[in-house]
Amino acid sequence: MKVSELIHTTCRSLTDASVFFGHGTDNAWDEAVALVLGVTQLPDDRASLATQVSAAAARSVAELLERRITDRVPLAYLLGKAQFAGMEFLIEPGVVIPRSPIGELLETALRPWVTRPPRTIIDVCCGSGCIGIACARRFAGSQLTLVDIDAQAVAVARNNVLRHGWADRATVLQSDLFAEVLPGRFDLILCNPPYVDAIDMASLPPEYRHEPVLGLAGGDDGLTLVHRLLEELPQRLSVEGVLVCEVGASAPALLRSYPQTAFFWPDLVAGGEGIFILEGNTVR
Image (cartoon, rainbow, N blue to C red):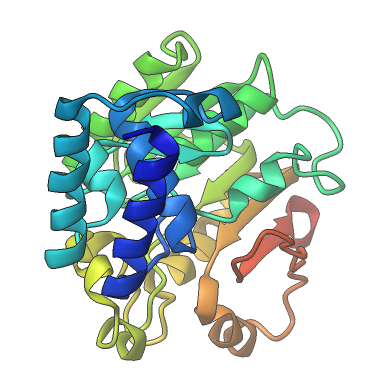
C-alpha cells in the first residue's frame, strides 16, 4: 500500500467513527495525514505520497487508529509529539496538547503590539513550553522563562528546551504563576491558562477528557487564574511591555469583569477565539 492509499483509508475510518477534532487538526484528512506521516517519519510533501508503506508501519497505523477511534485518545498522545507554529514538540499524557491560536500571532512577531524585540519573555502556565519556545525563536537574543505549577509539565518543557537548543537562553521553573520567579518585570508575558468554565467542562468531548483537568478547568467563570494574573501584572509587566493571554470562550466573562480595561482582541484568521492583548502603559 502506498502512503496516499493509507491516508485515504485512515481518513475514511476517522470520518465514519465521528471522532472529535481539536488538538491540532480540525478535520479527518489532516488528522489522517498527521497519523500516517507521524508513524512513517516521512516529510509532508508530494514525493511521500507514492512511497510504499512497510508492513510494520501499516500495522502501527492500524493500532494507533484503533485507539484513536475506540478510546478517543488524541493523536498527539498516541504519537508522543505535536506540531505547533511550524515546530515539533514532545508531548505526553498528563500535559495539555499544543494548539493555541497564539501561534498564529507569532507568525507576524506579534506586530503591531510588539514594536521592538523583547529582551525578557515569560510563558506562564507554559505546559509543554511550546508558546514560549516558538516565541523565543522569533526574537533572537531574548531571555526566556517558562513557568508551570505542574511538575510533569515542567519536565516536558525542559525536554523541549533541550530539543530546540534553547538551554542557554531559557529557565524553566515549577511555580504557581510568579510565586517562584525572581522579582522583576518582563517585556513580554505570554499566558495560556486553564480557562474552561464549569458549564463547558461538564460537556467536553471525550478527547478532552484525556487531558489534565488542571490544565483546562478555570473555575465557575473560567477566569480563576486570569484574575490572579491581572492582579500581579502591574508588578510584572514593563511599562512598554505586552501581555498576550488566551481565555477562549470565557472572553465575555472577562469583559464583564473588567469593563474599563483596554483589551485588544486580534483577528484570528486561522481559527480560535479569545486572545486578548494588554499594553504595559495601560495597567499601571
